[in-house]
Length: 326
Image (cartoon, rainbow, N blue to C red; front, side, top):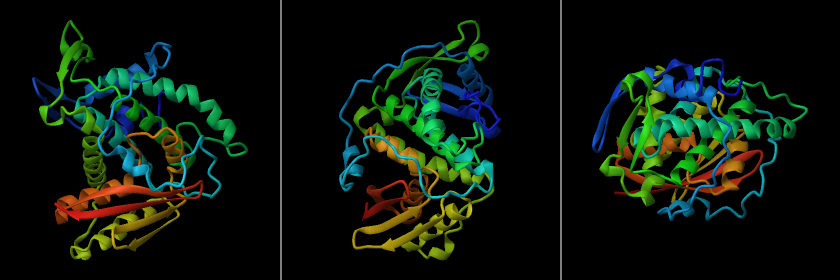
């Protein structure tokens, strides 16, 4: 069913890649273990049939700027017309999707059991319309190596991310099952470093880039940027070439500009997701490649950057990374 992704469980624990780490969030410290995530994933199958609540809106610092260069926003997404490649390794696709889920979990601003339920409900409500829209192509449910299915899951995941960013919590109760004893719930308090709700989209973006990069390293495919010699454009080219080799896109063109770097990616596995999310002005987007580039620019070269969508269609996406020294 839609609760299972790629035959390897819910999106919270895709591919069995969860690891055991200790989380400290303000007044709450607890073990973020594989069993905890699997427990949360199991809620996908037992989610009650609740209506989706429209989230309250709040001002978010800087989030509008990513859309300001787009000539227009989609009222609804169009089917992707360009043929796309299958992912060379499903583990790569799984790592990308896990990064979004784990970033929400890391920031402790929303109960993950509730988040999983809303993700499941959203996927269920949109899936049939998506399959009809893409006919005569057949969506292979659960096949994350297929860009057609990956695109859908990425859209639904980031819709849920956006929804939670619009209704963040400072302190909340989260289901944890037998791990927490008789109560089966724990209280979680957000880390004070991330307490500013207006800056949450930026906190998410920063951590998301780091998380994607770390997940790729866990797969044994670290990005070797030594040959870039400290040049931002060369770093971007190395990252884009890597994503193309892995089957994420057909091709990617990196151009150096006065403002920084422009990247045009053709046949990306997230073209439909980006249309879907930009039509809703989502506060988070599955721009996996640019997120990694931004992370490397910051950690390796000490450069801060912002991303703007320049163009988006059912064939390609163009982004501009504006670079400035901190």
